[in-house]
Amino acid sequence: MKPPSFAYARPGSLAEAFDLLERHGEDAKVLAGGQSLIATLNMRLSSPAVLVDVTGIPGLAGIAAAKDKVRIGALTTHRAVERSAEIGATLPLLAQAARHIAHVAIRNVGTFGGSLAMADPAAEWPACCVALDAELVLASRAGERRVKARTFFRGLYETDLKPGELVTAVEIPVPGKDHRASFMELARRVGDYAIVGVAALARAGAGKSGKALTDVRLAYLGVGPTPMLATQAMAAAEGKPAADAAAAAQAALDRDLKPTADLHTSAAAKMHLARVLTGRALAALAA
Ligand SMILES: Cc1cc2nc3c(=O)[nH]c(=O)nc-3n(C[C@H](O)[C@H](O)[C@H](O)COP(=O)(O)OP(=O)(O)OC[C@H]3O[C@@H](n4cnc5c(N)ncnc54)[C@H](O)[C@@H]3O)c2cc1C
Image (cartoon, rainbow, N blue to C red):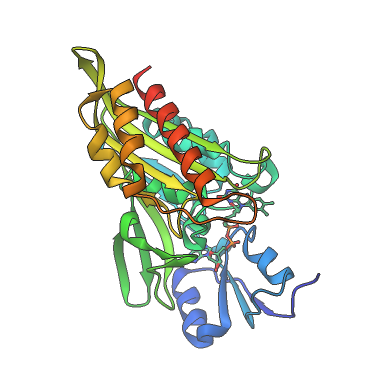
C-alpha cells in the first residue's frame, strides 16, 4: 500500500523544528531514518498531515566518548554504533546487540534515537539503555531535560516524550573495566524482531567457587509492553558464582516478568526462553 498524502518539511536547525512541531501540533510527525514510520504510513496505521524530517539538523549525529560516559547523538545510525571502535571498547553490550537489529540495509538508515522514540518492546536499544542506566536528552522550545531510560518507556509504544519534544542524544555511563556484557536473543530468522532477548551486565570477580557476579543487571526485550528490568532476578543473582547466579535468577524471574502471548509464541514459551537466555547470558559473563 502507499502512504496517505502528507506535507514534508526539512528544518535546518532545532529552533526551526520546534517551530514546525508547535505550528502543526498533533498533525506533525518527526521523521528520522523512516524505517518504522514509513512502514506505519504505508500500512495506514498513521496519517500525519506533515512529516518533519530532522535529518538535516546539524549536531544530532555522532558518538563522543568521554572518560566516564559516552554520548550518542539521536541521528546516529544503528550501523555507525555497530562499527564504532569507541563503542566496541567502552560499551560492548551495544556492539553485540547491534548485529541483531534487522538487516544491514535497515541498520544503515535507522537511528538510535528513532528506535528509542519508537519504543518497540522487542527492540534491542531500549533494553540495552535500561540495562546500562542510560539517560536520554530531550529538547523542546522550553529547553532541555534529561530522563533515565528506566523511566522513559511508559507502555506499549508509549514514552515520556511530550508534544513538541525531540530526542537529541543519549548519554550512557561507561561500566568499569571489570564489567562484562552479554546480549542474547532468539528470533525466528536472522533480522527478525526478537521473540525474547536479554541485555546482561555484571562485574565478574574471583570468588571461592568460581567468578562471583556483582552489579548484575538484566533487562529483557519481547516479554512485556516495555523493556523490563528484572530487579528480583538481579538481586537473586548478586554476589553468586555464575552457575548459582543463573539458577537463582531463573527461579526469581517470574516475579519480574509476566509475558503475554503474541501471534507466534505462548506466554509460557516466552517465560521458558527468558530463563534459558538468562542462564546462557550469566554463564557468558563469567566465562
Ligand atoms: C524489516 C524491518 C525489520 C526491523 N527489525 C528491527 C529489529 O530487529 N530490531 C529493532 O530494534 N528495530 C527493527 N526495525 C526498526 C528499525 O530499527 C528502525 O530504524 C527504528 O525502529 C526507528 O528508527 P528510525 O530512525 O528509522 O525512526 P523513524 O521510523 O523515522 O521514526 C520512528 C518513530 O520515532 C519518532 N522519532 C524518530 N526520531 C525521533 C527523535 N529524534 N525524537 C523524537 N521522535 C523521534 C518518529 O516520529 C516515529 O514515531 C526494523 C525495521 C524494518 C523495516
